[in-house]
Amino acid sequence: VVEMLRSMLEELKKKAEQNIFFYCLFILVQYLFTLVEMVTKFATVRLAITGEDFWTATAGVSALLERTFLDAFGVWWFPPMILQMCAAVLSVSWSVAIFAAASASWSGLSNGAAYAGIVAAVGFLLSWLVLAFFASLLLDIVDAVFVCFAMDRDAMAVSRAEVHAVYMNLPSVKQAVVVEQPGGGLVYGEAPTQPHQPPRQMHV
Image (cartoon, rainbow, N blue to C red):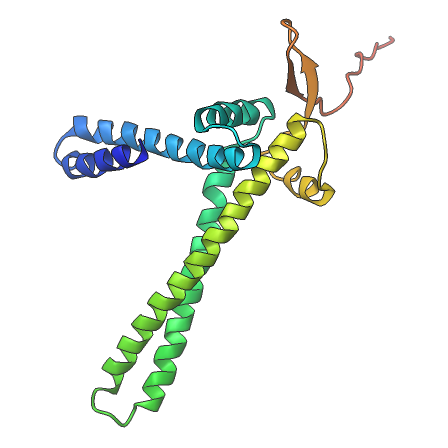
């Protein structure tokens, strides 16, 4: 499904520049692709933990995130953006350092600057690949820890207190209390910020 949506995105992207209908369709398909990609990633983590099949894990992780008021989009979008920006900055800094060192070493050559540019470009590419690999490992860890945290809160358990302390401070996680639905099911409800106080009576 992801590959099919990706192919549709590529085709619609080419036609979106000339037709407003294809542009609107491109936005819709892009939203569906983002949603499928996000749910698939968290469902993969859940099925690896529980051993469930893919569709059961998908339904389970969707209901889990909804019950515990967790904003999975923040975890899906924010950490990759930070890590990719850090990888890009470090790679550019490394390539600049390589270019400066190579230019100083080959300053006597007629094509020294060109050779230094080639070496710097290769250094940027290699450093970007290495940093992207380690960033992907860190993102997989973040996803797994996030799903484990959500499962802990759903079971009213704390497996790692330090992990809960970190995630409970995130803006995407709301303080919640367990409430019983009219049908008997248990869900999380938002905790009151302060106890209710009756209005004061004014005496004349």
